[in-house]
Length: 121
Image (tube, rainbow, N blue to C red; front, side):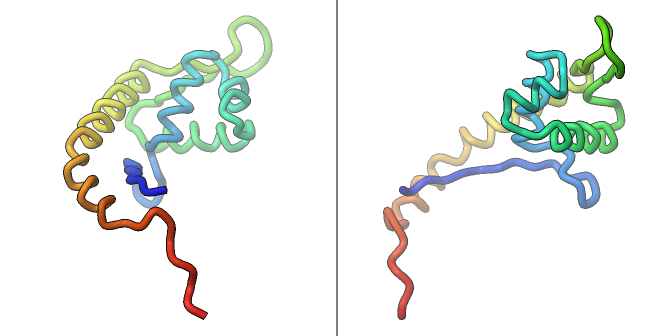
């Protein structure tokens, strides 16, 4: 199958500060109010989701996710105002880039085979 896939990633030093997976995680946290529930919804381990949140919070000048540890009513996570702005800016950039690429992408895809040829023996 021929296809073009663009993956926009924002780096902070050697860390991927933001990309498609982190954007999806922010949306899931906004929906669920919890890193663990967001992780379950995305099929991630809690540890992986927590590490992604940690990288985002360390790389941006303002935290993208605010957390309240412990149990009870006030425990959980929420996407901060900065996180909401970052997510909106990222999704906007995705749309603009994807909209600008089709002409070039079509030319490249036309040059591709449907499936690779078998390797030479």
